[in-house]
Length: 298
Image (cartoon, rainbow, N blue to C red):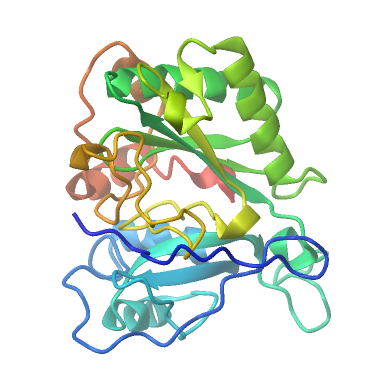
Protein backbone atom coordinates (compact mmCIF):
# COMPACT_ATOMS: atom_id res chain seq x y z
CA UNK A 1 0.00 0.00 0.00
CA UNK A 2 1.79 3.14 -1.16
CA UNK A 3 2.19 6.13 1.07
CA UNK A 4 2.81 9.61 -0.23
CA UNK A 5 5.30 11.64 1.75
CA UNK A 6 8.45 10.50 3.47
CA UNK A 7 9.81 13.87 4.56
CA UNK A 8 9.53 14.82 8.23
CA UNK A 9 10.01 18.54 7.48
CA UNK A 10 7.30 20.90 8.72
CA UNK A 11 6.23 23.81 6.53
CA UNK A 12 6.92 27.29 7.81
CA UNK A 13 4.01 29.62 8.48
CA UNK A 14 3.52 32.65 6.26
CA UNK A 15 4.20 36.17 7.45
CA UNK A 16 0.70 36.62 8.85
CA UNK A 17 0.98 33.39 10.84
CA UNK A 18 -1.29 31.35 8.58
CA UNK A 19 0.02 28.05 7.16
CA UNK A 20 2.17 28.40 4.09
CA UNK A 21 0.54 27.13 0.92
CA UNK A 22 2.43 24.11 -0.44
CA UNK A 23 4.64 25.03 -3.38
CA UNK A 24 4.80 22.73 -6.41
CA UNK A 25 7.90 20.67 -7.00
CA UNK A 26 9.16 19.19 -10.20
CA UNK A 27 7.77 15.66 -10.66
CA UNK A 28 10.42 12.99 -10.43
CA UNK A 29 11.39 11.04 -13.49
CA UNK A 30 9.73 7.82 -14.48
CA UNK A 31 6.37 6.86 -15.97
CA UNK A 32 3.19 8.15 -14.32
CA UNK A 33 1.31 5.66 -12.16
CA UNK A 34 -1.46 3.58 -13.66
CA UNK A 35 -4.23 5.44 -11.85
CA UNK A 36 -4.59 9.13 -12.63
CA UNK A 37 -6.21 12.23 -11.23
CA UNK A 38 -9.70 11.27 -12.37
CA UNK A 39 -12.01 8.68 -10.74
CA UNK A 40 -13.07 7.52 -14.21
CA UNK A 41 -12.74 8.45 -17.88
CA UNK A 42 -12.57 12.23 -18.32
CA UNK A 43 -16.10 13.39 -19.15
CA UNK A 44 -17.80 10.64 -17.15
CA UNK A 45 -20.26 11.24 -14.31
CA UNK A 46 -17.50 10.78 -11.74
CA UNK A 47 -15.05 13.21 -13.33
CA UNK A 48 -17.82 15.75 -13.84
CA UNK A 49 -18.51 15.59 -10.10
CA UNK A 50 -14.79 15.92 -9.35
CA UNK A 51 -14.53 18.95 -11.62
CA UNK A 52 -17.45 20.57 -9.83
CA UNK A 53 -15.32 20.51 -6.66
CA UNK A 54 -12.09 21.56 -8.38
CA UNK A 55 -13.44 24.40 -10.51
CA UNK A 56 -12.50 27.87 -9.23
CA UNK A 57 -10.94 26.33 -6.12
CA UNK A 58 -7.28 26.65 -5.18
CA UNK A 59 -6.04 23.07 -5.08
CA UNK A 60 -2.86 21.05 -4.80
CA UNK A 61 -2.29 18.19 -7.20
CA UNK A 62 -0.14 15.37 -5.87
CA UNK A 63 1.56 12.42 -7.55
CA UNK A 64 2.13 9.07 -5.93
CA UNK A 65 5.85 9.84 -5.62
CA UNK A 66 4.95 12.76 -3.34
CA UNK A 67 5.81 15.54 -5.78
CA UNK A 68 3.49 18.40 -6.62
CA UNK A 69 2.35 18.79 -10.19
CA UNK A 70 3.37 22.19 -11.56
CA UNK A 71 0.61 22.43 -14.18
CA UNK A 72 -1.88 24.65 -12.33
CA UNK A 73 -3.32 25.51 -8.95
CA UNK A 74 -6.86 25.38 -10.33
CA UNK A 75 -8.49 22.83 -12.62
CA UNK A 76 -11.49 24.21 -14.49
CA UNK A 77 -12.25 21.92 -17.42
CA UNK A 78 -11.85 18.45 -18.90
CA UNK A 79 -8.68 19.41 -20.78
CA UNK A 80 -6.89 20.59 -17.64
CA UNK A 81 -7.98 17.48 -15.77
CA UNK A 82 -6.72 15.31 -18.65
CA UNK A 83 -3.37 17.09 -18.45
CA UNK A 84 -3.18 16.28 -14.74
CA UNK A 85 -3.99 12.63 -15.40
CA UNK A 86 -1.22 12.51 -17.99
CA UNK A 87 1.17 14.06 -15.46
CA UNK A 88 0.48 11.21 -13.03
CA UNK A 89 -1.57 13.15 -10.48
CA UNK A 90 -3.47 10.78 -8.21
CA UNK A 91 -4.87 12.99 -5.47
CA UNK A 92 -6.26 16.45 -4.81
CA UNK A 93 -6.16 18.69 -1.76
CA UNK A 94 -8.37 21.76 -1.34
CA UNK A 95 -6.26 24.73 -0.23
CA UNK A 96 -9.17 26.35 1.53
CA UNK A 97 -10.23 29.12 -0.83
CA UNK A 98 -11.45 30.20 -4.22
CA UNK A 99 -9.07 31.41 -6.90
CA UNK A 100 -8.57 35.17 -6.61
CA UNK A 101 -8.27 37.49 -9.58
CA UNK A 102 -5.60 40.16 -9.81
CA UNK A 103 -8.14 42.67 -8.46
CA UNK A 104 -8.55 40.65 -5.26
CA UNK A 105 -12.00 39.34 -6.12
CA UNK A 106 -12.87 35.71 -6.61
CA UNK A 107 -13.86 34.35 -10.00
CA UNK A 108 -17.51 34.69 -8.94
CA UNK A 109 -17.02 38.42 -8.34
CA UNK A 110 -17.29 38.16 -4.57
CA UNK A 111 -14.72 39.39 -2.11
CA UNK A 112 -11.61 37.23 -1.95
CA UNK A 113 -12.42 34.31 0.34
CA UNK A 114 -10.83 31.30 1.93
CA UNK A 115 -7.10 30.77 2.03
CA UNK A 116 -6.58 33.59 -0.46
CA UNK A 117 -7.49 35.99 2.37
CA UNK A 118 -5.71 33.95 5.06
CA UNK A 119 -8.95 32.33 6.21
CA UNK A 120 -9.75 28.82 5.03
CA UNK A 121 -13.35 28.09 4.09
CA UNK A 122 -12.89 24.31 3.93
CA UNK A 123 -11.66 21.86 6.53
CA UNK A 124 -11.67 18.13 7.09
CA UNK A 125 -11.84 15.92 10.17
CA UNK A 126 -10.42 12.43 9.82
CA UNK A 127 -11.76 9.72 12.11
CA UNK A 128 -9.70 6.55 12.20
CA UNK A 129 -10.25 3.42 14.26
CA UNK A 130 -7.74 2.73 17.01
CA UNK A 131 -6.32 -0.66 17.96
CA UNK A 132 -8.97 -3.07 19.17
CA UNK A 133 -11.86 -1.23 17.51
CA UNK A 134 -13.87 -1.46 14.32
CA UNK A 135 -15.14 1.04 11.76
CA UNK A 136 -18.43 1.17 13.68
CA UNK A 137 -16.61 3.12 16.38
CA UNK A 138 -15.45 5.77 13.92
CA UNK A 139 -18.90 5.80 12.29
CA UNK A 140 -20.61 6.43 15.64
CA UNK A 141 -18.29 9.38 16.23
CA UNK A 142 -18.85 10.59 12.67
CA UNK A 143 -22.62 10.46 13.09
CA UNK A 144 -22.42 12.47 16.32
CA UNK A 145 -20.24 15.08 14.62
CA UNK A 146 -22.62 15.37 11.67
CA UNK A 147 -25.54 15.93 14.01
CA UNK A 148 -23.57 18.54 15.94
CA UNK A 149 -22.54 20.43 12.79
CA UNK A 150 -26.07 20.26 11.39
CA UNK A 151 -27.42 21.80 14.60
CA UNK A 152 -24.89 24.61 14.17
CA UNK A 153 -25.95 25.15 10.55
CA UNK A 154 -22.58 24.08 9.12
CA UNK A 155 -22.68 22.13 5.84
CA UNK A 156 -20.77 18.87 6.33
CA UNK A 157 -20.40 15.65 4.36
CA UNK A 158 -19.00 12.27 5.43
CA UNK A 159 -16.77 10.44 2.96
CA UNK A 160 -14.76 7.28 2.65
CA UNK A 161 -11.05 7.49 3.31
CA UNK A 162 -9.55 4.03 3.24
CA UNK A 163 -9.70 1.00 5.54
CA UNK A 164 -10.62 1.99 9.07
CA UNK A 165 -11.09 5.64 8.12
CA UNK A 166 -13.95 8.08 7.57
CA UNK A 167 -13.81 11.81 6.85
CA UNK A 168 -16.12 14.68 7.68
CA UNK A 169 -15.58 17.53 5.20
CA UNK A 170 -17.10 20.87 6.19
CA UNK A 171 -17.53 24.21 4.48
CA UNK A 172 -17.97 27.81 5.57
CA UNK A 173 -18.17 29.13 1.99
CA UNK A 174 -20.29 32.27 1.83
CA UNK A 175 -20.12 32.92 5.58
CA UNK A 176 -17.87 34.94 7.88
CA UNK A 177 -16.86 31.85 9.84
CA UNK A 178 -13.39 30.33 9.57
CA UNK A 179 -13.47 26.62 8.76
CA UNK A 180 -10.51 25.84 11.01
CA UNK A 181 -12.23 27.35 14.04
CA UNK A 182 -15.45 25.51 13.26
CA UNK A 183 -13.60 22.20 12.89
CA UNK A 184 -11.62 22.60 16.10
CA UNK A 185 -14.73 23.54 18.07
CA UNK A 186 -16.59 20.53 16.68
CA UNK A 187 -13.78 18.13 17.60
CA UNK A 188 -13.50 19.68 21.07
CA UNK A 189 -17.23 19.14 21.67
CA UNK A 190 -17.04 15.57 20.35
CA UNK A 191 -14.11 14.58 22.56
CA UNK A 192 -15.62 16.32 25.58
CA UNK A 193 -18.99 14.59 25.12
CA UNK A 194 -17.57 11.15 24.20
CA UNK A 195 -14.18 10.74 25.89
CA UNK A 196 -14.71 7.01 26.16
CA UNK A 197 -14.95 6.56 22.38
CA UNK A 198 -13.02 9.44 20.73
CA UNK A 199 -9.61 11.02 21.32
CA UNK A 200 -7.24 13.40 19.60
CA UNK A 201 -4.28 11.66 21.23
CA UNK A 202 -3.30 8.80 18.95
CA UNK A 203 -1.10 7.32 21.68
CA UNK A 204 -4.26 6.79 23.74
CA UNK A 205 -6.48 5.46 20.94
CA UNK A 206 -6.76 1.87 22.18
CA UNK A 207 -10.45 0.97 21.92
CA UNK A 208 -11.39 4.41 20.59
CA UNK A 209 -11.55 6.42 17.39
CA UNK A 210 -8.85 8.99 16.74
CA UNK A 211 -9.83 12.42 15.41
CA UNK A 212 -7.39 14.60 13.46
CA UNK A 213 -8.18 18.02 11.99
CA UNK A 214 -7.04 19.05 8.51
CA UNK A 215 -7.58 22.80 8.31
CA UNK A 216 -4.43 24.10 6.64
CA UNK A 217 -2.30 24.38 9.76
CA UNK A 218 1.17 22.90 9.31
CA UNK A 219 0.24 22.18 5.71
CA UNK A 220 -2.58 19.76 6.55
CA UNK A 221 -5.31 20.23 3.95
CA UNK A 222 -8.53 18.28 3.44
CA UNK A 223 -9.00 16.10 0.35
CA UNK A 224 -11.31 17.08 -2.49
CA UNK A 225 -14.54 15.05 -2.86
CA UNK A 226 -14.21 12.39 -5.55
CA UNK A 227 -10.41 12.55 -5.46
CA UNK A 228 -9.22 9.08 -6.54
CA UNK A 229 -6.75 8.99 -3.64
CA UNK A 230 -6.25 10.76 -0.30
CA UNK A 231 -2.85 12.48 -0.36
CA UNK A 232 -1.15 14.05 2.64
CA UNK A 233 0.60 17.40 2.71
CA UNK A 234 4.41 17.08 2.63
CA UNK A 235 6.09 17.17 5.99
CA UNK A 236 2.84 17.77 7.84
CA UNK A 237 2.36 14.26 9.16
CA UNK A 238 5.83 13.18 10.15
CA UNK A 239 6.73 10.03 8.25
CA UNK A 240 3.85 10.60 5.85
CA UNK A 241 1.62 7.62 6.59
CA UNK A 242 0.25 8.17 10.09
CA UNK A 243 -1.53 5.29 11.74
CA UNK A 244 -3.15 4.67 15.06
CA UNK A 245 -1.85 1.12 14.75
CA UNK A 246 1.51 1.39 12.96
CA UNK A 247 1.96 -2.37 12.77
CA UNK A 248 -1.40 -2.92 11.05
CA UNK A 249 -1.15 -2.02 7.35
CA UNK A 250 -4.94 -1.99 7.01
CA UNK A 251 -5.11 1.04 9.30
CA UNK A 252 -2.37 3.15 7.74
CA UNK A 253 -3.28 6.34 5.87
CA UNK A 254 -2.11 5.98 2.31
CA UNK A 255 -2.90 6.83 -1.26
CA UNK A 256 -5.11 3.85 -2.06
CA UNK A 257 -8.47 5.24 -0.99
CA UNK A 258 -10.99 7.23 -3.01
CA UNK A 259 -12.90 10.10 -1.40
CA UNK A 260 -16.52 9.04 -1.94
CA UNK A 261 -19.29 11.13 -0.31
CA UNK A 262 -21.69 9.12 1.83
CA UNK A 263 -25.22 9.72 3.10
CA UNK A 264 -25.72 10.03 6.88
CA UNK A 265 -27.97 6.98 6.68
CA UNK A 266 -24.99 4.99 5.40
CA UNK A 267 -22.92 6.21 8.36
CA UNK A 268 -25.73 5.14 10.70
CA UNK A 269 -25.73 1.67 9.08
CA UNK A 270 -21.97 1.36 9.55
CA UNK A 271 -22.36 2.44 13.19
CA UNK A 272 -24.90 -0.37 13.58
CA UNK A 273 -22.33 -2.89 12.35
CA UNK A 274 -23.00 -3.04 8.62
CA UNK A 275 -19.90 -3.29 6.40
CA UNK A 276 -18.81 -0.40 4.18
CA UNK A 277 -18.64 -1.76 0.66
CA UNK A 278 -18.75 1.43 -1.44
CA UNK A 279 -16.02 1.69 -4.05
CA UNK A 280 -15.03 3.83 -7.02
CA UNK A 281 -16.85 1.45 -9.37
CA UNK A 282 -20.11 2.42 -7.67
CA UNK A 283 -19.72 6.15 -8.40
CA UNK A 284 -21.62 6.34 -11.74
CA UNK A 285 -24.70 4.60 -10.35
CA UNK A 286 -24.54 6.56 -7.09
CA UNK A 287 -24.35 9.88 -8.92
CA UNK A 288 -27.27 8.97 -11.18
CA UNK A 289 -29.51 7.88 -8.31
CA UNK A 290 -28.35 10.13 -5.45
CA UNK A 291 -26.75 13.08 -7.18
CA UNK A 292 -23.71 14.80 -5.72
CA UNK A 293 -23.95 14.23 -1.97
CA UNK A 294 -21.13 16.74 -1.45
CA UNK A 295 -22.83 19.56 -3.35
CA UNK A 296 -23.58 21.38 -0.07
CA UNK A 297 -19.86 22.10 0.31
CA UNK A 298 -19.68 24.31 -2.76
